[in-house]
Structure formats: structure tokens, C-alpha cells
Amino acid sequence: MAIALVAMAAATIAAIGCSRGEGRTSTTTTLSPTTLWPYGQPEYSIEVPEGYEQLLPERAQETKPIGRPAPAEPTPGAKPAQPKSAAEKDDLTYIASVKDRMAAAGAKPALIIVIDDAGYSLTQLKPFLALPFPITIAVLPQVEHSAEAASLAADAGKEVVLHQPMQALGGNNPGPGAIRLGMPREEVASTLAKNLDGLPQAIGVNNHMGSAATRDQPIMAAVLELVKKRGIYYLDSLTAPGTATAALCRELSIPYWERDVFLDNSGDRQSIIGALEEGKKVASARGASVLIGHVWSAELAQTLADVYPSLIAEGYSLSTISKYMMQSAAGDANARPGD
Image 1 (tube, rainbow, N blue to C red):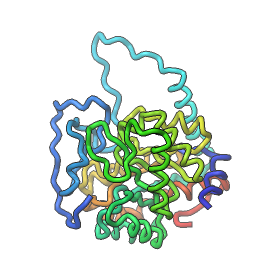
Image 2 (image 1 turned 30 degrees about the vertical axis):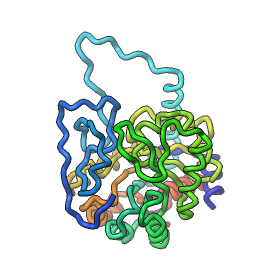
Image 3 (image 1 turned 45 degrees about the horizontal axis):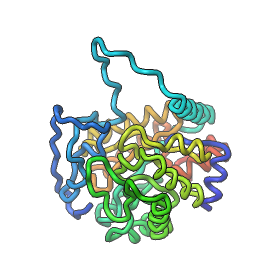
């Protein structure tokens, strides 16, 4: 089914959307606005619960709570920015053409919600499985409850993807089953294959951390070649700018998806609602938006349940990447959430 899904979708559309602790006690990591983070957007500049502090980069800067970083203000007297390379222009043209096709389809704007970091705590996962609309659960491999989390999510009718650990620039440990810089392509492929085989419900992959690995062209080529061979999809979590994913997806003729908004850069309800507003704007403009949250966010599941009726009343669809690709491939502009 997964092979047929991507084969059908790739022929018609390439899409832009690519821890532990049972309690709810959280600690806020304070980030100084003067601290330098030389690699672009860090993996996480967010409020994290106890036990997750090791996921934070050693150095970070404050980022806006939602969406992508705004372009820096020009420095007086600075040289103008250099023209984009031919490859960068090709990527932008590719992405723009996808947006145009989505808008032309006339479908309801879709909000695609992905919940990362499942596999450590089933208690934290269960409120997301009870949500009355389609979501995607991204499961970490080779941790205590990986297999059970994927099984419960599939039984609840949720989409399952592998949350593949990848090396970060900040030196943090991405966890077991990680893909790291310097791995031969064969080892990258075998690592990914082992993790996928351990989660047979997974019909896609997104990266956990990965600000170093996702920029490495040979590593990502090995990842995406296996993704294409397996007939699944890859979602770029965009934990850092400048990833190799878009260009490689274009070369391999496979659908390209990327994260648009992090839902819980700040874990409070009002910030989550603000992030949803950003996602709605993106979906209205592009046809769909991908919003990533985390299974340990104390207020996220309840907030999503509370706002769901209003999202439907406003004309938004709640979907998953596979559903959206199939509906787009079938030309079903009137598909409804949960169909």
C-alpha cells in the first residue's frame, strides 16, 4: 500500500508540507539573547520537561516562538546579498510550482499535525491517540516503548512515521539508532532499514535533531534512496536551514515535505494557539501546512482537542501526509477530515 501511495502521489504531486518522564513537571531553559548560535536555528529553543534537557544544544539564541526565522535586518554599509546559486534557484522554482498546484486543486486548506518523540512514555502519548481527527505520531527507534507506541498509534487510526535520530551540530546525543556524520552510505541505509523494520507500521520518516546530518548530501542521498525504495515519504523537520533534502528529492523525483511551524516552541496554551494561527496562514496560502509538536508538551493535546471544532468551522481540514497525497493524486478537492 505504501509503495502504491507514493508511486501514485509522485506521478501527480510533490508536496511541501521534511524522553523520558511520566510526569508533567517542566523546566524552562533560559536562553540569553546575547549567546551566539553559529549554525542557524537550533534543534530546540523551547520549554522542556525534566529528563529532556539533554536534547538542547550547548549554545543557543532566542528564536521567535512560531514559524521560521525572519530575515536579518541589513547592516548599514554592508554589501548586498549575493545572487542565489543556480541550485538554490532551482529549489525555489520547484517549491513554488508545488504551491501553485496545491492552490489550483481547490481543496480545503489542510493542517497536518505531527507529534514527535513518541516511544519513551505511553502515558504522555495516550492523550494524542484520543484526539478525534487524523494526526501523525513520530516514534523514536530502539527505546523502551517504541514498538508499543507504534502499535497503539496504528490501532488508534493514527499515521505512524519513524522519528529517525540524526547527528546534531550542538554535540547532543540523538539517541539509539542514530545516523551520524562519517557513516558510509551502506551503514546509513542499513541503520535506517533496521529502524524501519522495527516499526512496521511506519509509512514515512522524519528527522530527530539532525542539524548536521541533514546538510550532508551523501548521508541524505542514502536516506532518500531507501525512502524511495521502500515507497514511503520523508518529512524534513527543518531543525536547521540549508538541508540537502529539497535538491535530492527533486533529483530522485520523490515528494518533498517540510515542517512549516513548531507548535510548542513555548509550551503554554496561548503560544500553541498562536502557532496554530501561523499554520492556518500557511495552509491558506499553500494548500497545506505541516505543524510539529512534541508528545511531552503538557498542554498541547488538550489545546488541540479544544480548538478542533473551530478549525473545522473555519473551513480547515485535519489531515496526514499520506491522506493528503492520495487525495491530491485522486483530484478529490472535497475530501473531508477523517475520510
